[in-house]
Image (cartoon, rainbow, N blue to C red; front, side, top):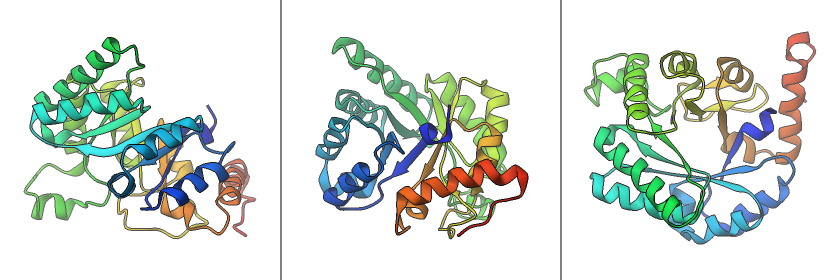
Length: 247
């Protein structure tokens, strides 16, 4: 599968018109678009439906984290929306994750829909080991914590997890190659970094075996996002030969 088909473009903006304009501009270059808290809170489920009408897939990034009954009800709503994927917080616990998985499955079967992929957020890529231990009070190191949460998510019936590139190979070894890994915090050597702390380049992430990569601000802040995607493709093709230079 080409890297473009594994790309999820994060529409981390509050404006529906601009979001739809981006989807239109990237037609032929991106198939999956991530709708997060900012855009969904601003516009609501209508933006999901509008993007899907354009023939694109939606990753609904709302990170459900609540008591099992509430989270499972939200999962049923996400399934009815017909999204390609949505996520929950693994810190919500085993029962919450299992109820979410069961609810999405039951709703999809009952209403004749394709079941969405469900991935569990492990440790946010904005967090460091210092913050994980000092502020949150978790005393495992990051990789151990991610492995623990990934294993729990798999047992609960989730399809994969969201993690940094640095944990992908460990997750694959523990949970198998069919267990999905979605990696945010991705950058190109041509673009400036953002507030993701456990980040990696696209080539590093793909080499680790990530199934999907998420790019948002680093891509959309470029004057021409289409050219930016083409530049990344050039970077990946030329990297091994040492010929690539950012223009």
